[in-house]
Each structure stands twice: as C-alpha cells, then as structure tokens.
Length: 300
Picture: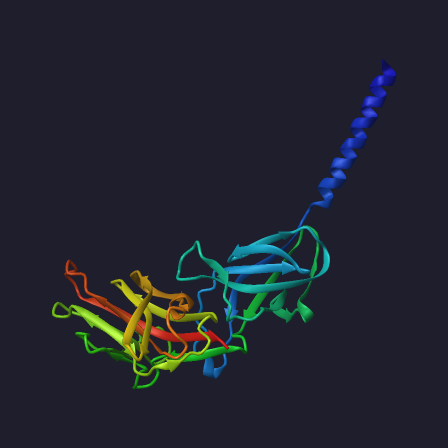
C-alpha cells in the first residue's frame, strides 16, 4: 500500500512539474501600440487620418489585426522582426476592415525612457512578461497617384456647383469652423434650398480602372450626403454613387472605396467626382456641410 502511494505521489509531482514548465513556457512578452501616425510630403497634403487597426506580422507569421490602441501578447522572447501596416474601416463600416493599400509598411520606434529609438530593420527585442511600447509611423507609397487634392487653402476650388444645384460652395476661414489650415469648404442649405450638388471642375483620364481607388475626406455635417463618381462619355454624363455619409457633429474622416464604380465605365471615358443631396423636407433648421482634405487616390 505504501509503495502504491509513493509511486502515485511521484507521478503527481512529475506531472505537476511538467505542467509548471509548460505554464512558464507560455508566459508571453507584450508589445504596445498607442496609434499609427501618418507623415506626408508637401505635395501629398494633410497628414490627417482615421487609422483604426494595426495589422501585425512577426518573423513572417501573421499575428492578426488589432484595434488601436492595442497591447498584443506574443509567445516569444529575444529579437524578432515585426511588420506593421495601418488598417482602416473602408466606407466607415466596421465590418469592412482592411490594410489601407496606399499606406506603406510602418517605421517602428522603440520607447526608451522619454525617447523613441528607430528599430533597425524592424527588429524588436522582447522580454518575457515585459512590455515594449512602439511608435508606428507610415507614409503614402511611392506608387500612389494623386488624381485630385483639394485642401481649400487657396481662394479657388477644384469643385463647383452643378447646373442643378440650388446653392454654391463657399470657403470658410473662421477658426472654429475650419478643420485645419486656413480654410475649409462649406455648403449651407436654408429653407429656400432644396438640393446641393458639387462636381469637379475638370475631368480626368484613368486608364487603369481595376486598380485600387479611394477617396479620402474630412467632413462635418448635420445632414446626410452622397458621394460618387461622375463619368463623361460620348453618350453623355452618368453618375455612380459610392456612399451615403451620415451626419457627424464633430469632424470625421472617411476612406471611400471607389473601384467598384470605376469598373462600370470604360477606360476611354473621363472621370470626375460628385458630392450632393436633396434636403430632407422635414428638416426645419438649416443644413450645413463642411469639407476638407479631399484626396482622390489610385494605384499607379
């Protein structure tokens, strides 16, 4: 009886030791990313963004897409190579999360006290049960074609009221109305205004219709509006709606996916943008729309 108990006790100790070793082996290291910033060149316009996610790969192995800010447990220690891309909600929809195709792989900086030091070759040294804070900075890729960039800093505008519009675009420069810089574009719809529509004053040739195409837009409004593609061909002008954008009392940003509308046309056509909406007849107060940093981008 004593022998059986002794053997049983020994087995329990051995299994306990194995479980303990296994548990210790699975203690993670951690990386923390507060946000991903965008740095732009002068011809690329504003660095405003609405990056929501970090898409993370370690040593070529995909770890996942994590909503920012994020603290990610990693079952590894020592030096490892991290690849991080900026993620967005396409069309502002939470269910359509993707790596934004126009942002480059992030440069990584490791927090060391009060400073951040560049992670050479994207290498980060992990320590079990410890946290490494990273600053991630992305840029527009070199193969991005800026079809249009309107930041309302100048007196003129790349947008004009269509023939059907009851009102025109105005440039506001009051500090509390402007998103950033010296000016933003605005539309006001009082009682006598039933419809507004802005169209690009020029049309553009886009030979590669199947390449990724997005429109970036900062906006603030108390009424929905539509945005989409305007196509001019030998048969006339057609409009293809991309998205209806809901009101936002605070400045917001949206990335509008436009490739699906482009492929409805032909490469011989000419392309522009439209922004517009009939006013809700039940709305008793003035409708307002503010716009800034309109960027129309396509992969080259």
